[in-house]
Image (cartoon, rainbow, N blue to C red):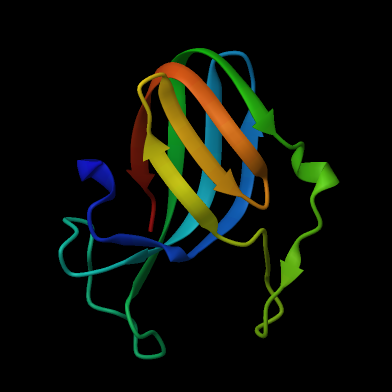
Length: 119
């Protein structure tokens, strides 16, 4: 998907997620590379650009396979921060989207996806 061009999900970190009947939101620290329009020069202690963002799914018919955040144990990083691993896969399917990670095997029927960059 073009909105994720230049974002390496294998090097990005899931910081949290939430869902309700109208919206699913993942908070991410994204690994962004030069071919992305969201790329900025890396900070001195980074080997690529990392930016906090949200991946938001809306206008879907239904979804299944998403664990409650409280049921997933976070991973403690070397710097003492916590995250929930990576997004192993995020693909558009004929029916909607499939998103796989420590949070579950999420299947979203219909809908649209947005990327919101915050830092």
